[in-house]
Length: 374
Ligand SMILES: [Zn+2]
Ligand SMILES: [Zn+2]
Image 1 (cartoon, protein in one colour):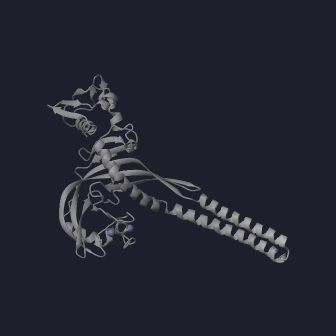
Image 2: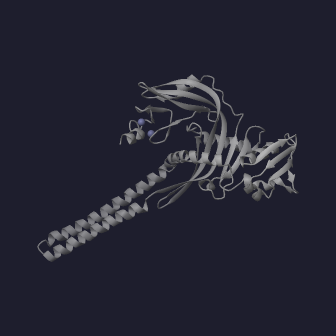
Image 3: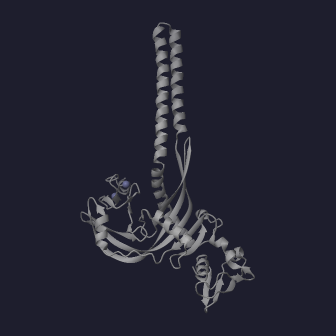
């Protein structure tokens, strides 16, 4: 990508005021935190001719200014943004596409409108650590449409492929890097120097991404959890067998010496001690296999894509509501709506009487309606 536009985008996203004067000149007004971090004055004038390849370096004030920008472009815990303005997927028959992929089990839908638009997506990588008596660690990527809250199922994998391709072969105009800022600092104000608007968007979408990561984590750790449960059951069965045998022996002795009150009392207290021990050992086994899953975001990428947005009316009995379902140009599929209860992405679902979307498993138990009626 052209160095001049990279510089304009990067500085603009960090709240610098960039003015293009003539063919070569860039006048930049730096806000004070950036003045300090980049060691620049309030107003700097850069000489940067337009056009691809014309400037490969930018010497300003006797130093390589691009190197100076590194803290802005590559801060720790990356939150970056990328756009693919030319990645389009024209939808010839929106009604047909909708009819073949969307199903309402107890209602109907109607396409109201289909128009081109732009959506921004948040793709977040989460580190997921499952700890019990053993530990397992994975990385999971999920993507959420920030505009419509729909889930572009499968976009993460396709996008990683696209980004890899871009990495090996930089295509002019195929995409453009917009900004980077600190993801970890976005939960507080400490050390953050990025665009505040981008961060507030991140706060709104991150909980949705986390929900999707939780769903993905349950699938990823399915075998791990099954294995844990199997070993717990095995240990509990062994404990039960052992203590049943002990209790049986105590009972036998008791029957033999039933007439001796002293022996009887001794046996009873042994029995109680064995029982206490048994309950303690059961709790120990449960503690040993207790599962803790920690989900932590490590990087976020905002992706802007040209899409076809379908406005669809969902109808049940006499009620109706509108939803927006984009056709994603990367997956080339409809994006999924989300089940009101389990938050899984769905395109085949039921509607409750208040038209909330519920997957096959969760219907008819609508948490939104149930909470309201209490
Ligand atoms: Zn559900
Ligand atoms: Zn409902």
